[in-house]
Image 1: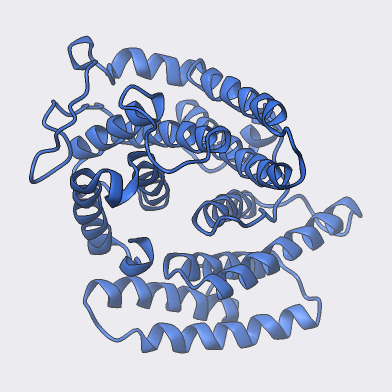
Image 2: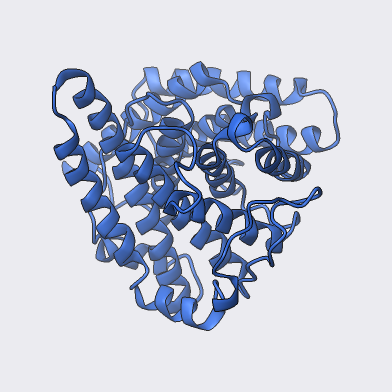
Length: 352
């Protein structure tokens, strides 16, 4: 907000996003949001044409990309994400040339946000090649210093690193997904290579649970109780499953662990690219039900929107959509999408 008072492009971007959220919730006209977005775009184009690339411009373009993402405006989102990628390339080049100081903690957060937008766009609009290069594993030291400037404790630093590690793994998986799709078109025997790629991703996926803060939380919160290790095939009329819900004592961790389950589903889809669970005993199906059972305990007031939308989407694929699991998926969509729309300006028809 402080930067927005000093830059007209960001000022109109912030107003556009604010109008979208508030006016969508109150069922008002979205014309003010569109008007401010148009003014923001005019100023951004002027700055970019003059090669006046600043952190503030990166922030504004990231917000516009987000705005078009949730409205499922594919072409505008693609345009803004591509522009954002080029902006970060230019900023990185200037840092390397010593023309600028090190990036601020806020810009680093925007970069992380942009990576997440890139992976979400690749999943929602598949096949789409991700724009941003994949982040290598084990990059905690790269992030720890700037994260420490933005949070209140070392514990929060470790939670942020754990969340970023999941995003990085999912982003690398989107790169592998596109490589696998291309290989299947060109090769007569692509599966051995694809199995190797996905095995490496699954190994990293498994290791994520061994991070100290994650391992301690799994033990403390008891996400899956012994007596709940079986899964019902019948969903209740009003919600997901008739078996007891999974009750994480920490909502953040419950959402993060569901994201971890969603990452597994996506990696499994690379190796076995079919919609549906395969069998009721498959790990894909097991994690899909655990996601539903966990969200049912978190309640509608806990939206955690971006991660939840992606995970719900992958859960619907793992359950096989309405054709394979009509009761389950209908309950999932009606409960989750309606709840999201109460808190978030989501394009319902695009999600469904």
